[in-house]
Amino acid sequence: MWQGHDNILADVRTELKNMITNAVNKARDKGLLNLEAIPEFHIQQPEQQKHGDLSASLPLMVAREAKMPPRKVAENIVHCIPESDLVEKIEIAGPGFINFFLTDGWLHDLLFTIREKARYFGRTDIGKGRKVQVEFVSANPVGPVNVVNARAASIGDSIANLLEATGYQVERESYINDAGAQVDTFARSINARYLQLLGEDIEFPENGYHGDYIKDLAGDMIQDYREELQQKTEAERLQFFKEEGLKRMLEGQKKDLGDFGLNFDVWASETAVRQSGKMDEVLQYIQDKGYTYKREGAVWFKSTFFRDDRDRPIIKSNGDVTYIVPDWAYHLDKSQRGFEKVIDLWGPDHHGYISRMQAGMQALGLPYDWLEIQIVQWLNLLSDGQTVRMSKRAGQFVALKQLVDELAEKIGRRFAVDVARFFFQIRSSTAHLDFDMDLAVQQAEVNPVFYVQYAHARICSIFAQAEERGMGEALADLNDADPSSLREHEERELMKKLAEFTDVVCESAKAREPHRLAHYLQELASAFHTFYNKHRVLDSENMQMTKARALLANCVGTVLHNGLALLGISAPRSM
Image 1 (cartoon, rainbow, N blue to C red):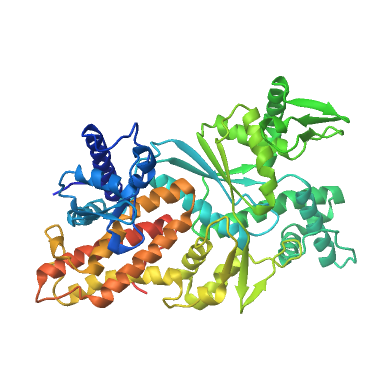
Image 2: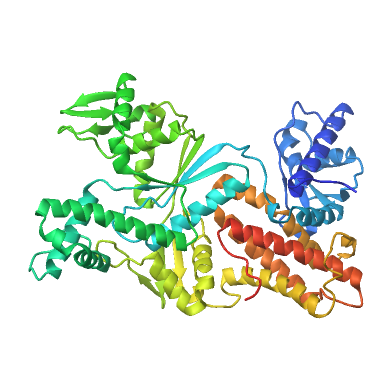
């Protein structure tokens, strides 16, 4: 029997690719093909099942150079492919596709590989331990974590999980924007609410933060520091509100994210960066390299030299640095901490900021692809078919905690976080997302996360039923199960879907796209439900078939568990 390794589907593709390559070389030696070199080609899954398990389109790629019809090229290649216990038959289809119909041995091996690897199945060592940082959320600490930040939190955490699963050493980091005009506005907003709560008739600051949380902060500080605050000057009080307000908001953000299943390794501070001397280091370096010039009393960076659309001011005429400089300094610090790759997740309002950021990194001597920036698009929260408008300053935003609490009222806290995280990741981060609250609280198969979780719970119930029927001991050890009895179409399709898992994990990590894994899990759950509805797993009259199907179900459960875990979602044993 043909033996594969952990990523069996990738091994099968490699084996078939080697077969074709060797066959082309053999056909060339026999004078059947006139080719100077074999171009890069891929082994892919055909769109239709009737075209086999895997397919290659190499004949279409080389037909012109070979000076013969692609179908004739395919015939000459297939003629030189030797028999293999991996391949049952080969067909030539259409204008020249080589379609492979595989034996089931590799699928049977797959089941025992999953059984052996268990919770580690799907993991690879592609990253070779390289040090990568993923920075995400990084919201201004002037309000609670909102649902837009929460989407970035879900996606960023899953990207980090996927990178870890593919062999990278990953650090999760959030950047606290605790400096700048928005922090001063935050302090003035608290001060205004403080005075209003004390009975003073004052006008609220223009562009202030109107959320109820500001009033709550002011009320808490009156309760905790009333006498101390009364003794301060307004300037001292504003400084106190800035420091204490930021401290309390950050504590709240950390708790909300922790309850959401997310804990950062590092919380970096913009204030700390500004005080570290890194900005002076950055400015001195790029000036020494000749990347700056003066104009109208300001210092400009030659950003166009690094493919930006225009040069950028970095020191204003009044001597203050522009906002790009502390960001450069922060990322210089990242490089000095030894990260070989840095991935930042930003909101769409920062899209125009990417080119100047990457230009700065190149000016500091870092490779163009060292910093990778991924945009996480906005989402629309829908309730009763209506869009909930969100504006932090207008006090109309929806906090993460509020969303989870509302979900928990309908489906229980046990599933609230799972539903939120799955819905946040169901679409590409670059696509706008409609989060439908009405769908999210439905405990039915139309709800995608319940559909996937129910498949796992159903598998667990199979083994619980086996115990009740006195079959538990027989199914305790499935290593002697005989998968060759799994001949039904639904069984084979389910095994083929299992074979895709490691590839999906690798491709999701490479593309930084957790939604690929979410879609795969829905497809796997669908394949299992189809199998389960057509075939009985537990049959006391046929223990050979029972053990084979129990092995298959056990493997599906393992993959569902592992895939959900990478998305930060639980795999319940009961629903």
